[in-house]
Image (cartoon, rainbow, N blue to C red):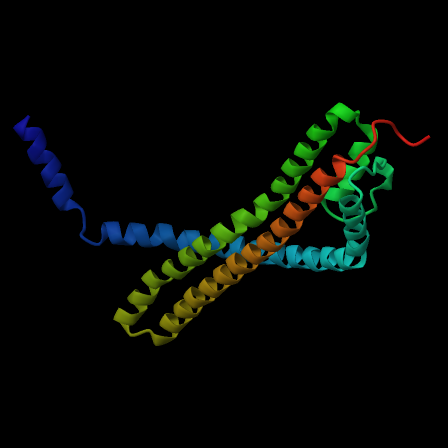
Length: 213
């Protein structure tokens, strides 16, 4: 048993002292390009989400008056009853609910609202992930080039050092832009959807049991 321990100690002592640092450096360097690729894809997706947000905002601005008018009329006249087809066209959860409420029985309308809520939450999941993972990948893209940068510094290769630092700082900026933008988009959309669900629940209480003939 003692002989086995001595052999293990001898084997560890035979490992070159730079072996583990070199191994870790090679592994992390290989991961740099996948990290940059993920950041670029996430940046493109963030641009798409931003375009969708602007498009929906324009549509909401054009139609927000009709929903407000309907809700105000139901507030002032609590006994008023409407058909699902009387719900005006509006982007977001209300558009989905309008179609489903028209085809659903009266007792199933609460389920329709729940489904619309789940669908709205599902649309926010990619934004939630991007807002959290963007800075994480940005941090990874920052730390990975620091190893080669320190090696370049020790060998006096200033050009390689500068190149690695540019990559490190660039990935940091990308990660922060992705995280911050997706967080803002998610917050805006969540505010919209919460308001839509609140209006839908109120409107559903004033729906008639039968469809308009």
